[in-house]
Length: 423
Image (cartoon, rainbow, N blue to C red; front, side):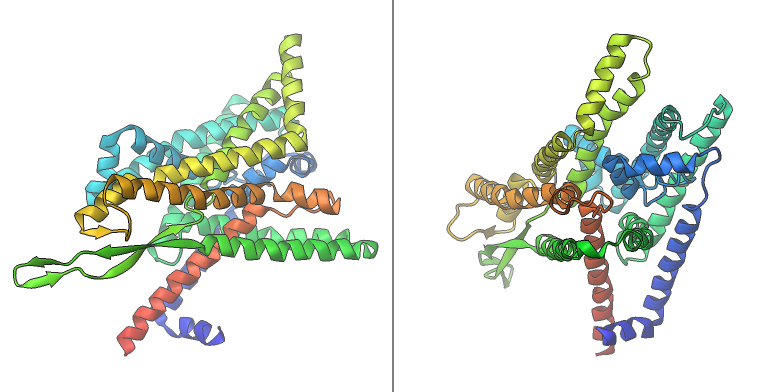
């Protein structure tokens, strides 16, 4: 390990890339500390301490939401726009053709549309967040022009982070958006550790040991599921072209246990956010019946048993949905058949597609249950340890481990390339 770290900093190009990314993250964290004016910090802290869901939303903002900074939304609108564009490729075949068949130019056009879609999404989310914060007395009385100014600044902050993320991605050391979210999670660790040390009780030492053990098991599980895959054997028939013979080789088709990543959690988060926000807005309605219904809905979503159960079910359902989006057994079967490949013991064409569909459904079940468990991990931890002041974000854990694994793989790939050059 030490030898690899030394080797990384010995290569000038790689060293400069890493220092550039560190500089970008420093800029991001400095921006995230600049708050918008008129925020009641005590009310804001109490709001996030008593609401697990907005704590998760803060996670995807890179930590900017908890301080209502000028980058309060982080890269959240960009992620939402990317998801919407991916779903639109299923609805409009012409859009899918642009993305998949027009090469690099098509992907650049697709990414440009995603950037444009980010702007109205960021504006709507900022206005909704301001309305919610005003209803909770976190923001004082502000004029219409001040609301407009905050929306413009927050949208500009999201666009800035989107650009910084793309600069990081261009260095080919990890995904820029994921690294920005990773930086926000890691930056919150010192404050959480200080909170734990401030509330440390020696009488609960055994509980702390259980807590630590659960964290270690969760990390091991995240690594196992993230890296886990099933290899489907594929053989290629021999064929002659001109005077040369091709094929006759055997390889494998890797099927990942978690094809969807953290996307199902983001989908479920968006669905769970909507009813609660609408209920918060309507609770102050002058109509007594509407206000009463809104308060009842709000109380239901504040119930941890209902909330965690619904959240778990949605994550599992969206895992299957997004896996169906990114993995098409029929297209893979057609591609194998065109290339002269086949799965031993399975007839090419329809039978191969059905076989792949059956296999992906089975291995996705374990991935879906794991993602659902990770999503509700804070509730599980609190239920077992009965420690309300400590919340371990399973989603944050999943993102951190996934980003570290992906970044390390890309760095090792660049090192291997330079090893071959040296050889």
